[in-house]
Amino acid sequence: MADLAVEQGVVPALRITDYEASKRFYVDGLGFAIDWEHRFEPHFPVFAQLSRGSLVFYITQHAGDCQRGGLIHLFVPDVDAWHGELRSRGVAILQAPEESIPGLRDMTVRDPDGNTLRICQRV
Image (cartoon, rainbow, N blue to C red; front, top):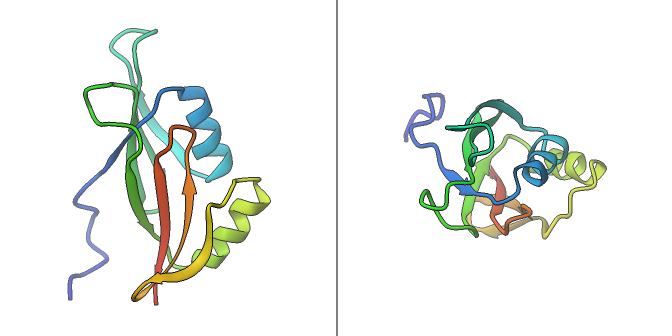
């Protein structure tokens, strides 16, 4: 079995359209931090890295990077703890924690641009 302690080898990107709404969702709602953001000019589209613990991904306003409506799986130690935390922050939960995929307990949330985040725990 692969060593799960190694550095994340792939960093997915999710397409966003409204950076302020996305910041509210990811930072205030999901508890992620914005590690950095890049713009070629002050009013140009943003490309930013978000992280929370060992979870890292990009959000991008650049239309050529990817389409809206993506799906990523975030693996966490305790999906039920995440569920409680996100509910306390007012995040709409599309699917409460359940074992919908063999070997995983997961829950689902969706960002303002229709990107789906499946928060998973291996069981």
